Length: 207
Image (tube, rainbow, N blue to C red; front, side, top):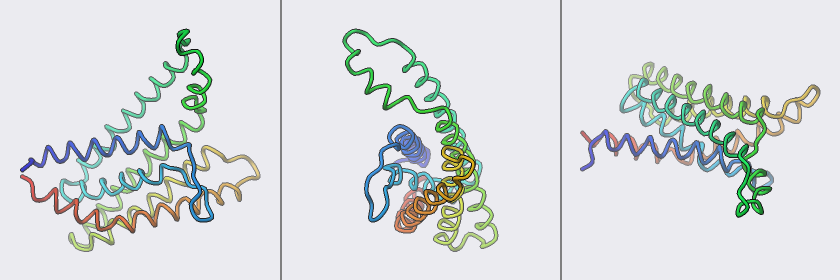
């Protein structure tokens, strides 16, 4: 049987991978019903579930350590990204340089929006989950998980969209982006509720 620390290491790896995948590949959108959704919609809800699982079993401090570690990794990724795109390509890589720049040269505004949304929303998710847990005396995991996720994902989506795309006079357009994305994230969160229970039980069984 794996120890709890081994399992927490695995959850941290999944958490970081989910955030980095969303950061690197989230610019792609695909048709989903009547919306165009970012592929990040598949990975971001995972991070909120892991927040809930770690907070439930290990407490708020451990969940916050996950968030802080990932935030530092995102800052490192940003710094390395700036270095990579600024270096001149070799003759062998020159043919692929335009595609490389297109993929990895995100604007500073988009990057700041992403980092800010992550920092605020993940902390808020952990805070709300902890407060409801204390009020309900550890009962109602499904309620704590979904309420904290739905509220924090609203802030995550709103902060990112407004910081990334708001211009004077286009608030209505930005809200037209926020609400569908938030709704889809909420749907994914509710569908994944059984996974939260399974992960909590899995983590609690270890020593």
